[in-house]
Image (cartoon, rainbow, N blue to C red; front, side, top):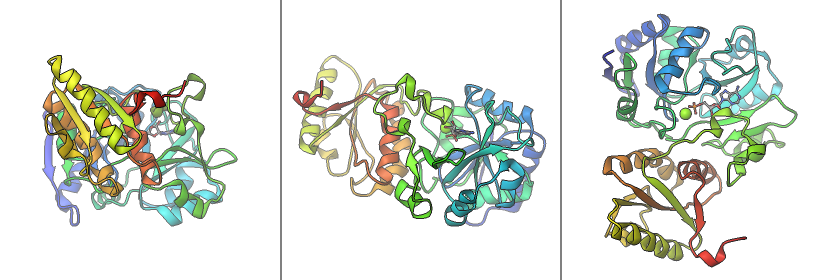
Length: 358
Ligand code: AMP
Ligand code: MG
């Protein structure tokens, strides 16, 4: 299959290009499109065969459910069989935007879309191309991130092409996305609203609407414990990983720089291709290596927007080993570190080994 790439103006998407994409969705085909978080790989959420095509194109395990994108809050009552008041309260505050809610699914939603679960993930995106596609097609669009399973999520159309060229008919190219990390997922099916995946909407923001909201314990775990298997099934898989081995170090920034340099020199001496994941403040300290900065340490929105692109760049460099710094873990930093830890296979180490806890 030949993959067509159509460039669109994000602020004023051309109606003809949107109509072509909408027609493909109506025929049960796949279309990749930008959202404000990352690029999504869309299909008709109510068509089991179309949903199956998503899993096939991504190489995604079939128990990893899809997020269903909707154009308005009326869809809640169609796709969920119980809609708690908390869902409407969150929708009022955060939709359209980067928040996904887990609700009990209605009979309309096939199990192929929910990975066999009795619950469904719903989100109303704010990106104008995504909204135009939802409105023109009149379809509820199931769309996980448009990357090959395990790879960093795509924040540009080129990333989608890199992973899915020849596997899908159309990519709508709206340029780099705004946020760059996937949506916050909050589970509203239990007694307490639980964050299953941190994102741009932080716990503090959620608590302004639902003061009892909390993190699911699996989100905060520094390692993948079997007894803490994440409730968002996607969180249990190896994810976001560059092809090289990524190790990240935490502690006092000067200690981190010294340790990264030491480890990078050691691998370079062994003849490996070595790269460093740095910040604006530190990038000049690693001039002996291939270095990529994700932004200023205090500008978390910039770091979020750059992270996945940077992880992909390490592959283009052919890096065998990547050594990196940790970032602040508060607010949006929680989501940044969540993705970075997964990319590193939870390989986070204290910069000064003697600080290591037993
Ligand atoms: P992606 O959009 O590629 O990040 O994938 C969707 C994410 O939403 C995955 O991490 C899924 O595990 C999660 N998800 C989707 N539906 C559900 C659900 N019903 N319950 C829990 N997590 C879900
Ligand atoms: Mg994904």
